[in-house]
Image 1 (cartoon, rainbow, N blue to C red):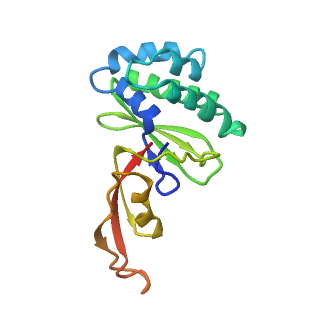
Image 2: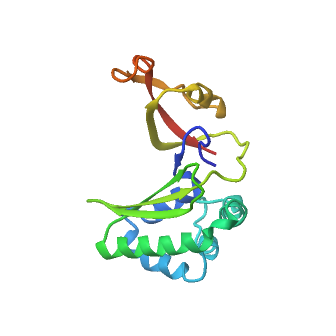
Length: 194
């Protein structure tokens, strides 16, 4: 589970696993295999290609039960996710670039899969509403994602969500805008997931 509701971008376990399959070294051989696995369903694709140590059975069950079932049943998640990844993989394969996957969670009641071709990779963004329920698991895996934002009360609470989460660092202060904004901290925080 990612850093929500405090921060809203993650790779998480499932998308980090996907990214490892489509990195610089693997993408030329993995794209045809991934497209083949996606012909049946996203759940079948996720369950059939798991190298030892990459995902646990509980990770697979969480993806199938929560992502594809319980969290957003009214938003056609399995079909949208499948179609979105087929299109993104097909595009990345055609331009011979690796892929990176990010999950963005916002308050909109929408489930979208975006993909964007950059000079060195194809970035896939899975955009979702908040999950129906949040885990109570402690956040213990550092992500290679940082946020820089206007500080607020949630920032000081974030380190309590996991045993090794550092306190946010003030990197600047607001210098323009309304008088109530000037002097407020701009913070930087590394993100974690469970």
